Length: 269
Image (cartoon, rainbow, N blue to C red):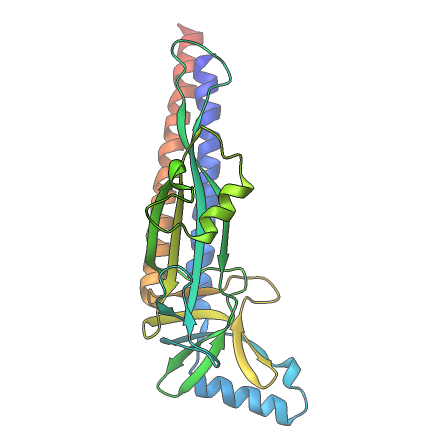
């Protein structure tokens, strides 16, 4: 019976590996099939559609290679580090001891980390190439390859008015939102940014929004990819992950087959 349970477990893991393999394959194929365009080409296409009276119908899934640049308006500054950027995100997590539900001599508390709150910028930024620039709207997506700009941990006992160092408001708000009791070890805050002037690859749907070309998540499905890793490197990485998932699937299927073989031998002998 043990061999049957083992075989079923490895078959389930093989199924998960197959799903991962298909996901990575679809990702690199989507990038490989994408059409590369310059910022000037997108501006021209949008202007042509606009002059024909159908600017709102302009939509094209494209890829743009360039560098990050600040959008119109005031320069964007990360709230914790104060660094200039085109996009930022922060998160606050609570680190605590989780007491086992079953009390025994062997049961010991385990250290856990729980996300409490966070925030990110909503402003559009620009990707700029040699021909011009277009805007990028991240929405709820995250850029790949962002820079860690701030990391700190604040012990629970520091969250008082007598604290030696200043406690960020975001940490105090997180403490107020949680069960801040003796099980709490600390609060951890992390900030990541996308600085201006770094190479950027963008894969998404370009549309005309009030006279400005904006690349965002495709409306008919698909992913918005915004990455400091170039197009060719992304394709190579996804292919490598696909190969690893395939190798894992094959290994798991072999183990499942051997388990069934041994089970069959136990029935015979």
